[in-house]
Length: 213
Image (cartoon, rainbow, N blue to C red):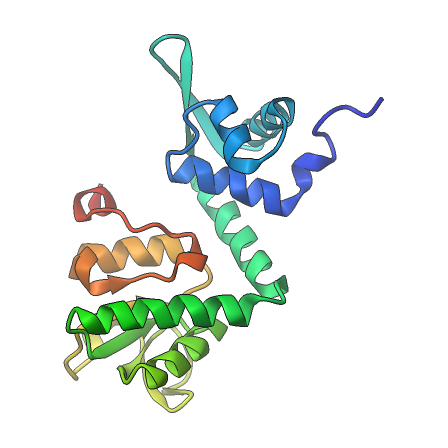
């Protein structure tokens, strides 16, 4: 009989879901995780053990014989890699990204956002630019450290937000790699109300105090 989870634990979709749940503090218990991921409790246990062994997740003892899980720096890196891999291989990426960006920009425009800076050069940035045109939101430009170019799909490119001379109302995170870190840095600089993050990046916004911690 095959050792449970030994092969399934390498399933990138489930592993990404596990790391995502841990980051968003949904890993209140292995039973809760099993419910979140829609897999057997025994398989969750196998995933957790493997992730701890690989240094992706750490566990703390909590009251009433419970445990709390949190991602290590390696865990954040692996989650970022799996997210990029998932998005790149997903046939529905364009449709999903377009839906998320359109909704995000429409809501932002309703709050008075009319000029946006993209942060992160990627396919997502191109889709966001298209959605901005449809929503009549102006893209001021794009920030990408060490981009090696001054223009991206017709928009100016800067190494840092400090180089932007034109006024803007918000920044839209379009980085597919290290999106969590990019999001946190943007919130620390501009505040959570001025940072727009598409849901498909799985980079849930944290409050300013959490991002700075």
